[in-house]
Length: 80
Image 1: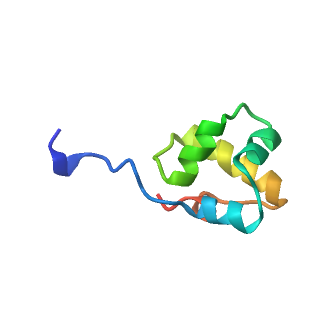
Image 2: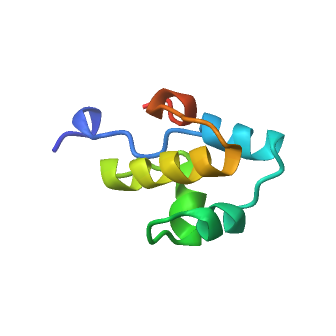
């Protein structure tokens, strides 16, 4: 694949990271509250802006929603 056709994988800090800071949430807080299996590495990658699978993104949305006590959409946490 040509260099200009490659998928951008590192997308910079995501809104999810800012929300976590604003509400004083740690990576461990999300892992602990998640009803589905989730690792610390998955959360760290999500915050840093690494491109995630839709399944992993959905886990992040559910966990953040539980932690904040409100319903969230993909666009609330991710820019891609």
